[in-house]
Image (cartoon, rainbow, N blue to C red; front, side, top):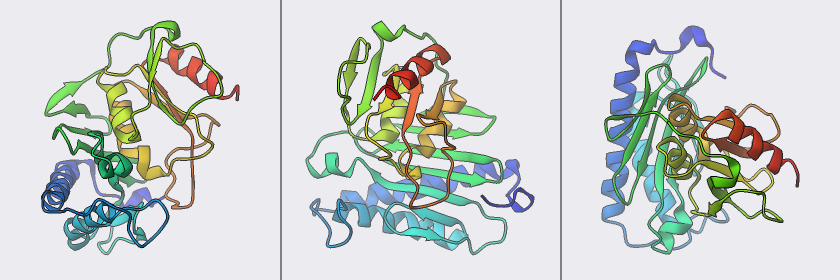
Amino acid sequence: MPDSSVAPPLSDAATVLSDFHDAVDAVVEALAHHDDWGPSSGQTGQYVSDLVADEAVHRVLDPAGYGVLSEESGLMEATLEGAPVVVVDPLDGSTNASRDLPWFATSLCAVDGDGPWVAVVVDLVTGTRYDAVRGWGARRDGETVRRGSVPSMEQAVIGLSGLPPRHLGWGQFRALGAAALDLCAVADGRLDGYMDCSENAHGVWDYLGAMLVCGEAGVEVVDAGGRDLCVLDPGARRTPVAGAGPALTEALVAARRSF
């Protein structure tokens, strides 16, 4: 993780947020004029739209000197001393996008010496924008987001990635296909929890921006195996779980560890 002694001061968070929103604007513009949503000739599971979105993000962040860790292009070191590394999923839910299923996003999260610092997650279908700064709170379209009511496991609606081997005791579930948006839906109350039912399926870009939004909204995101979720390693994979409150999170983690 970057040395905190050279991390930008918190007073620069507004600049980072502005840059992130500019990057998202670039993605929106690029995809608006894009008509090939099929597979790329690159890595398995990658789409042409992933590369288009990735190039748009780099076009904004690279000249500013940020380090970038992207699902599509790997790790690029910062060119400006003290600039944070930005963890990027240019198009989270690209399989949904390729099939015209309206649930996909762009996620960016700046990491400093203390962990996730500034994040923006944007629903590319509705235009809804979530942002968060560590210690400053989370917002949805400029309005403060703070999770309120917490249902019991038996009443909860849980977002899933993958499927468990059996029913695990929740009221209902949804498998929506974009982890960043799934987690933001826990933050704003549309879902009550989230569970990755696959084995180490998610890279840090899938969840880190939404994890900061959740944390600032009062929702804890944890790894089912108890590992650190903030890892600047493109090869690392984790199993994120989140609940609207501690009791629900504990119940979901226990359920996830049961298989």
